Amino acid sequence: MPAKQIVLGIPFYGIAFALMDANDHGYFAPTNGPATNFSEGAIQYNQITKYISQNNATAVYNSTIVSAYCYSGTTWMSYDDPQTISTKAAYAKRGLKGYYAWHVAGDDDWVLSRAAQKASEDQQHRRWLWPVISIAVVVLVIFGLICYLQRRTLKSKAISGVMKGFSSRLKTRVGKGESLESGTPNLQTFGYVTLKAATDDFSSENKLGQGGYGPVYKGKLPKGQYIAVKRLSKTSNQGFEEFKNEVMLTARLQHVNLVRLLGFCTDREEKMLIYEYMPNKSLDLYLFDPIRKYSLDWVKRVHIIEGITQGLLYLQEYSNFTIIHRDLKASNVLLDDEMNPKISDFGLARIFRRDDIEANTNRIVGTYGYVPPEYVRKGIYSTKYDIYSFGVLLLQIISGKKNSCCYGLNENLNLLEYAYELWKDNKCMDFIDPSLDDSSSSCKLMRCMQVALLCVQAKPGDRPSMLEVSSMLKNESSAVNSPKKPAFSTNEDEDEDEDGECLIREAIHSVNDASISELCPR
Image 1: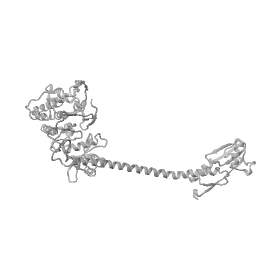
Image 2 (image 1 turned 180 degrees about the horizontal axis):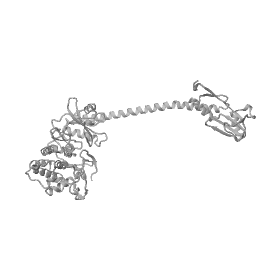
Image 3 (image 1 turned 90 degrees about the vertical axis):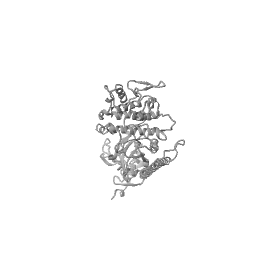
Image 4 (image 1 turned 120 degrees about the vertical axis):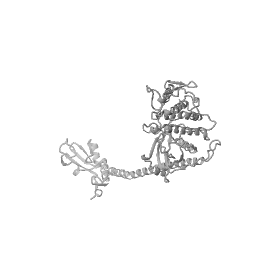
């Protein structure tokens, strides 16, 4: 018979026995039979409690057997008190020990019945309490999930709405009556699913590189067009404003030496930019690789220098707005299938009106080694910012050297000062990349080195304009000023600025494929 169908009637009386030894009063102690001072050894519960009180009897509860007993002298009584009843009822309700208690008969004062009833009610409470708690937890989880998905959807729609507004504003007037250049292409809005398929689910095999703001993938659209997908990581320092800035700026720029933006994607809270595909990747992969650098002979390097110069000329002189890139470096110069250079990554760029000279910011951005001193010190930027970066890049192109290393006999000079010391000692050819081995171009190499040193002068006013740079590089016979000591010299611990403030020397180090998003100006 199932345990829950077995009925146990819990007695309302106890049994009294006469102990053989008053000192041996355990539960299984030997007895002489029922106590003679009680009728047949049976005694009601209310009489037991009275006996315990009057005779100062010792009451004991045995939790193992689930029974109570008391003793006084040789009299020993076994009985069920409220604690015993409650425990047995709880066991019975759980189907334990093979019995089921439902009623206590003959309980005159209802003490035992109430104990059994309380155990039953507690069990019933637990029975319905757990389902209620479970349902409440499920409801809360579902409600939280709905709120999260709704918030995510609204945020995605808001971003998409803003980005759609960008495309429409590309055809309108921008800033104080200035119109955009004619021929600005329409940007295409790409879906996440399309880009996922084009990049084979953003596979590592299609990964072109890792920039400061996230990875770049090679993709192929259904019609066969190859693209480069710049996917901003969710942990990137580049926020929505930088993303918007890059879309707005790059879309309006049309020049053979600037990378072309095809569209963007903001699905599923993603921030992705889609560019034309550059099969030869970036310039730094050639300049600083001991094998690949040999594929860059002097003719190709001159071609790359001229292309970068033309791209900067367009940004500073020939577009409707003066645009400062603020992150020009070797890894941001991409190369197409014919090794034509294209300046990329306009996330940090800023627009100047034609009558603006310089601007100031408290948020310092850029890449170590390419940032001019006035920007580090006071947050001042102008077209001379990109001139400085171009000078550093030009030194790297002709030398194949990184600006994160130290040079010289004692290896205590940064790239700029090492170049200056060799220039001053008329040892320019010691600075040139040995892989070139082209003595016939020594004059052109020395001219590039001299122009580069002029571009990295400490004071912005001592640096040439981009028009002057272009002229000096093209006309080797024209007179060129002698450069002064470059910025960030390691020979002096401090430089005094025009206001008497001290600029503590900064180490001129660079990570070509990572841009700092913020520095404290000093």
